Length: 315
Image 1: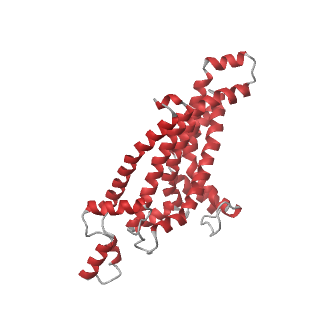
Image 2: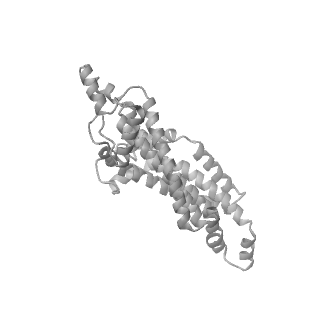
Image 3: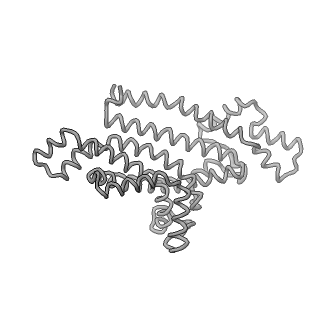
């Protein structure tokens, strides 16, 4: 199967998955106690006429399947309504926070790949030696450490005790030196677990490749060890590593919800937490749908990367 046909097939499979995601997102928010009308009527006199008017405004007087269809068709057009709390457009509220989350996730991904792959290579080359054992223990600690605990410890040490970093970011443009220092601690927190996972996978793939016959042949020909490792072994090992690295994008998006809350980072994850505590259902539905859709497309990206690197996966 050609790559083009494989892409079309995977995209067609993605459509029912996204439909299922939208149904789950809508259904789960419906299971939560209260409605947008209940929130609004906390601050106004709850007359029957006003309740009926608000229920009609939010389509709550319609059957559930009609409510879903109206919400879904609006969501396809990127119209998620207005915030119950601020009366601001939901799309505008998300777009104002999205660059912060993308910058944090991108920085966390660079940390994950920048640490995970070199350390994995080093650990594989030093297999069985103390450096390998230290790397493996460090990777286990990185995977086992919860994001929120690591974030709190980094805050306590580097912000409260040593004063190296501030916590609350200023209202300045992203990707500037002023913003960079505010992003270091949350990005390290976000990227640590992914770096540990990538390191373990890189090491296991490299160790497996190093035992292959072509490596012995390359060494017998007198090729420098650096050439054997970089040009031959690493190239073959990166197939599975790249796949997992793409999947880590989904993990970073999911983990950003906790990390942004710990570091008061003004991103989409913190917007979601605020929406949950304030029962702001339009924003809650939109952010959950955005995160779920990102995870679906991250998996699609991983499959495409894998099929491009290894054409056998298409069959």
